[in-house]
Length: 169
Image (cartoon, rainbow, N blue to C red):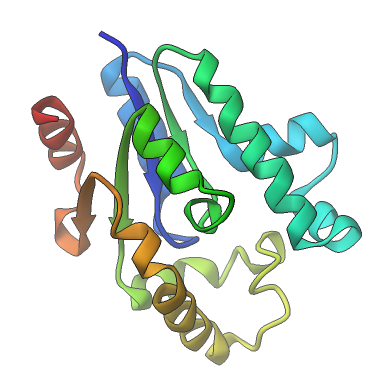
């Protein structure tokens, strides 16, 4: 059976972690959209943002996302902003199962402490400003995330719950 699964949510929610676990459990390939963009462009996401700007990055992101139309089964970890641009959320919903991983802002802010240099949107923020930034970002992105077919939040974010909801989809 074909399984196209797209994980969405803010940066630091564990999309890549869960995508890998889910792909292994379902015996399908795992992909990270940012890694695919970096491979295609032969440079980092940070470098693309710095050199080309966010609009060009979002164009490249949409192009990389749509390349997954050619795959039968996979679990894809998307970037936090992926659903919010270029009708990507509509496209993902038309082509597979979307799951919003809705982790608490406290958990995300703690996770991002050691990763900020790899996160262009928070790299320059003071540590105490990260949670406020994430809160604003969630407010701006919530309407897109809420379009996901499935939603796991807080304590619900467990492998058995991913598998249960996917098997029921």
